[in-house]
Image 1: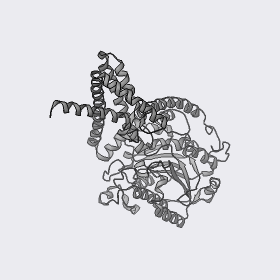
Image 2: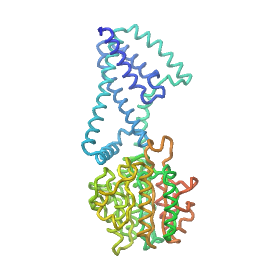
Image 3: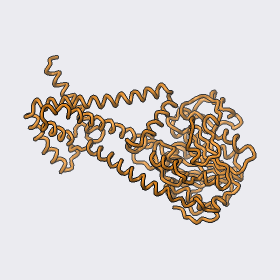
Image 4: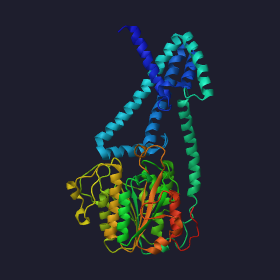
Length: 509
């Protein structure tokens, strides 16, 4: 191959790389779009003296490479969490993702994923920078031709922009603008949230939760149990409703709108328990450093023993003190001796059995517990059948239990079946169970444009408890009607406190 074709191919490749960094994946037309940033960058470089072109091109290339990396991160976050990447706050999401990969595929896979991501990011930045430098050198060497080309393309872009044609692209500039606005709005939101934290209407209220005196109140979060799961588990919900009724239990259901989609479950838990919308890590950090009362701490103040059952927690969890747990049954405390099936190692039935043994089988004072059920966490690597409760033991039985199909609907069905079976086996007149999802699964499961709604159900034998929910308008049974009320998840705490307190002086928001 002669030198001329090599130079042509190199220049064409450099142009393709720069064009991709400017328009992909922000523009629907992709590489057919004409980016205004390219026109402005070319004009700037043509106006500079020759000695300043390469340093300027290096700076432009580095900036454009960083924009390309952010664009890729945006696309990844939108596909999983249904929101763009936040450069200031998403270290927690990235670290949680690394932990998830480590738990699912092993530490070597997690390390490989991190190294691979860093290398790809560096390759993008370096590749774009070298490409910009190369094109700048070509433009300066052929200034007249470059100027004529720029003069011809500029009115084309203007005409397309005025006509609203998608060929006229400003995707990179809009991405930078959107993230600048995101940072500005985040700082303003921090001030607004601080004001919300300062107002806690139930801090010194007497008579809270008196209508539940003597009851064991259990809040069970089912991982990724969103509105979109309902058609997939309709048979289980119908059978569960019938089974509970045969055991003397009644249930009612509605919807809550989670602050998150696809992940970051801890934000949903914080929202539900605190009565404040906690949709990002900045709000979460401010919340757990505050003296805000939570549903858990309010139960504790009213005389209940409080417990957090967290099978996915393998390290120190300082936030437990903020939530007001008297005890935490984390992964070590649950003493699971079964096989390791990845991040969601502990089957939900075992979690419920261990909780029953540790807290409810012995004589106890009224108990309030929050339980995180994690079998339905993606990628649903292990979905066992529901066993006879006497066979669960220390979990070693699962080494000989073949899994069912590893898919979303089956995992949610297993979690719900485990809960219903637990109530049928161990439920009594003093049990009040709240079952809800933490968030919808990722957009890869639900598709784009779906809601953030999750089902919520209350289950009890005590008709007086259900009577307190008459004003909620919830549907009878475990499956809420499509037209059932939809509340923001952050509104539930105060609605619940109002319904089950002697003196509801503070109306629900």
